[in-house]
Structures are given as structure tokens and as C-alpha cells.
Image (tube, rainbow, N blue to C red; front, top):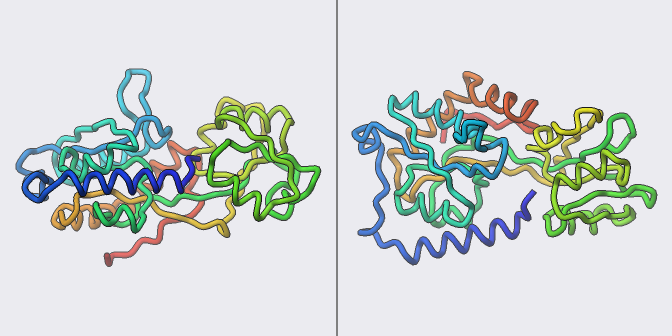
Length: 274
């Protein structure tokens, strides 16, 4: 998983840039009535974050977030227009009104909320342990032993946590998550502690291995919502109602299970009040 501190710092920098570059006259976020009048909903997703979003075999953007966006557009009765966005430009794009809202694992943070508004949560974000099934590596205590090697990706948020909470384990530092998964599958490491929401999807190439994925709530759970332009209350309020309906009728959970190969590790608390 991307280092949250770096992600948040990058998001804050982008947010500050957006705030500096946009004056009230320049901002052109569309309120709900303008979206309805135009007959289309412009949504930003990041296709480099599978299975949240990805390019399918037809070179079309697909995944969990496009599926949820399509359900929202259907409720609104308008055409969905997906816009591929990267992490650096996603906040400026929504702040300037080039897209109506942004997805892409938009963790709700107080720093980002200075520049954009958030809807209620769409999904949770969780940390935990990835290991081989049946070998007992399902707790922080079980990992904190000299004979345990953790395969970790350099520069991620998990590293300082491991140094602090799992100091007795050996750490094998690797450059990317496929290498991390391969090291565990080959027995060069016993487990890994990191973000686990997308891990079932990432482990598909290793179907010969019986994996065990265990959430560790003590590390903290965060939530991702839809990012909307600041003070675009009419659109944000409608989206909150739509997301409540999509949670309560099971649409979001079904889409999550389809793309992430299982239920959310932490259910989103759903309330009719926002």
C-alpha cells in the first residue's frame, strides 16, 4: 500500500495548489441542477489501482469504482462519463469542476477537506496480515519472533509500525507487491503486514497457495468517500442520499465482493443522517 504519510502530504500539496490557483470566479463546479441539465455525470477514477479501477481487455475502465459510479448515474438518470485521473491531479480536477466527483481510494482526511468536500463513506480501508493458511501467523504477537521473516515493500507506512510493534521479526525489504507476494509463496518469508483491501485480487496469480488474510483493527481503520468540490452542497447532499440507498440495498457490498474476492474487512457504518 502507498505510504499514507506520503499520500496525505501529496494530497495536501495538491490541495494547497488547487486553493492557490482557483479563485471563486475560476471555479466552475456544477451543482446538481447543472448535472441534470447536462444529462451526464463526470467521475474521476484512477485505473492504476486495481481492482478499484483498471483497464479491461477492451481497454475500457472497469472495476469496483466504475461500477458504483454507474449505479449512482443510473439513480440520477444521466449518462456516466469516466475520466482517468492520477493521484496528483485528482483534487485540483474536482476543485476546478472538470469532474463532478472523484473516487480513487479517496481517504477522508482533515487536510484534504480544507479544499474539497466529502460524502459519507463508500468503503473502509484496513491493515492486516498476509500469510500462508494454517501456520499460525494471524496476530502481531505471532509475528514478533526472531524466526519470522516479514516481506515488506520499501517506503510504505507499515515499516515504522513494524519497527515499533514487531521489533523481533526479521524484515525482507522488496521493491513492489508482486515480489512481496512471491516471497511469501516461495517460503522466503512467512508473512507481511500491510494494507489488505486489495490483497485477494493481487493474490490471484498464486492460486496454488492457500492464503490467510487477517485484519488487525488496532492499526486503525480509515474510510474513503466521494470527493466533491467545496461548497457544492446540492450535489454532495444528493450523493449522500444515493450512497445510503446503495449501502442499504446491498449494491456497494455486492460490487465489493465481486471485485475484491470477499466482503469488506470492516463494514461501513450506515446512517440515514449526515
